[in-house]
Length: 275
Ligand code: HPA
Image (tube, rainbow, N blue to C red; front, side):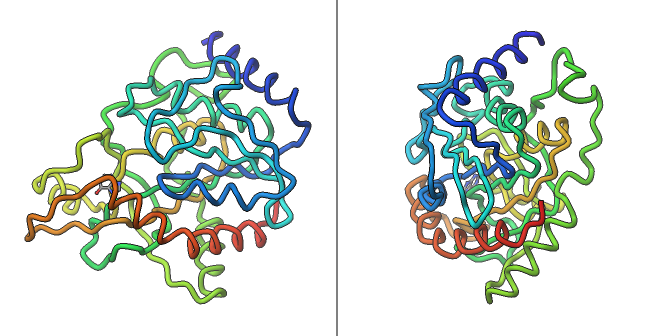
């Protein structure tokens, strides 16, 4: 565990050489949603490749950088391009950026993802405020020796999708005339998309959206006592009848098309946040 602490310290040191900004809000930007980081002003961009000991993202559409600066009057740090379990990274590496953001000072995490819609009422292009998650990844980033200076052995994450933040997101969406969904995100390892039987199962157990990320970072946020706001961008809808094939290109395309309303919502929420 000493090793994890050393990795965090090493990364923090290499970031502090570039900037002395202390971020208040951490942003994890999902597939196709990374462009929100372009709206950060007075920014410093630090590629993962410039950070000692940092793993690199291999997925198309994932840049792999921290972008720090001002957004709507707050100091934010955006993780542009996240690491995924299906890329073969250990969970400890996937969640290292979150550990580093915590060590830099974030008080709140906004985590976003592209996800398939399981709830039959959802449409491609919808935004869903995550009320909770079901982790079906078959792994947990906290497995292994616990460093109690980072968090407790058995953290309670039953309220990690903070009620106050969810209420703020819904009120803010109403204020700007955006309709949003709410629901439970099912996390899977991927990289294959789901079988029809798996989708049926996820629907039966109460899932509303499904994707290949978010749960690891949110579990570590829970370990680190950072309240989370999660937003899924529904890029495709589960269709039990047709045999239309789902592609990564389609996911990215709908993600990109949703960016304007997604960005507007996230920026407005940040503006309204009292931290
Ligand atoms: N399944 C899993 N992950 C996803 C999907 C999906 O349908 N769409 C976007 N990410």
